Image (cartoon, rainbow, N blue to C red; front, side, top):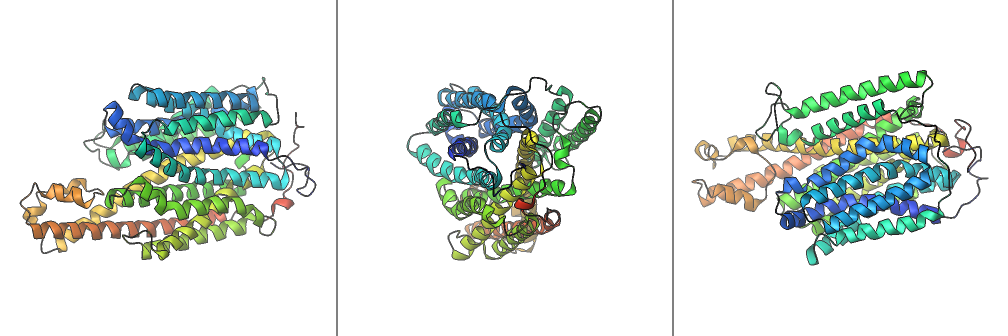
Length: 543
């Protein structure tokens, strides 16, 4: 947050409070990354289908996205340090529920609890950084939050994959519990503050934004399963033959619009809104939000597409996936931390445009060089370049929002960040899935028509309406139930391999196009350097 102190005169503060906040970000990110690794163990332990076990992931994301704005107002009312400690204890309780859960219902409830706690931790991280750090230290602290997400993803795959393989899925959440205990103990190093009991939470706005985010998330996440337009057999219901997914997306947008209308009226009448819209008043701040949405969505697309190909198509383990994604995750971690060194030389607009140019070039390069071997130097180079652009952008756009608003609105900026990132992650993953499956269907359909060794009589015995990414073994198993000859089976496997790889390449090329379009909002980022930022508003004295 901007202060009346310049970066050169700001008093240096101990980094011990930042260790606490860094570990709090790691706590949340590690928990999220550990859930996919634990699905197989939960399916076996509880005797439920994978779709039921994966509800733990869904309810966590929904809880965070729907409650993060309300969580910000609770922090302002009660006091950030006090509520931070309370929700960290709540997060520890969710880890215990996962460790000792007798049924899948307890695990789902545990992640709903973790999501509710994270909805308050997310804005509190920004508010507590603003409370504890100034100037260059504040920029470095913001960069650390971005790097914490990347390093926790790597550690979750390595630690969680090892524990899950050798011991079981429950010990993974002992690590989550240990993080929560460490964060709680370190929280006593944070600068104390007092809440404002006069703040009232706008329940109408909370219901509107909560319902809107839930509907948008459910809609985008189920575009594949329920149908992008017409309802599929897996859809829970249909609306005059339409899939409920686009209907939910439309209703979510409507709720969002009502939320903005209601909030503007409330601000005009002098009442405290759920989120102060002045944090996105200027075109520069709105450009930062758009850029944040795109960069997080791109990251979600890549984190979905490449592991999908490695694990499902190639049949490799989560540990292999973590090794393949290591160049990307480590580069994001390092870049997010070091990019703040360039803030004194280059304005956000320059760094933002350059960052999106890097991600665009990297995605084009990957679409050309990617093949069935992820350990080749060209592929590693592409992931490295994409990681540099990604790490720089994640820290940059967040820093623009933080430094453009007064310290009193730190919680509002934090809730905006949490809402944007969660929604972008859901949209990015869903769009990547729908895009890849659609492209695969078109590619397989065209290749079948052009392939002389696969007659129409054989194609008719395979369900072409449910084309998806499957391994070669699964494809051979399906073809065993047909009258295909061994030669035709091998021809079908070869065709599928080529179609899948072509789909991934085309998908990466489309993502490169989206990344190139993102240069437009990046070109609207501020021209000034952090040490030239004007004070946006008087800052209340620290308690």
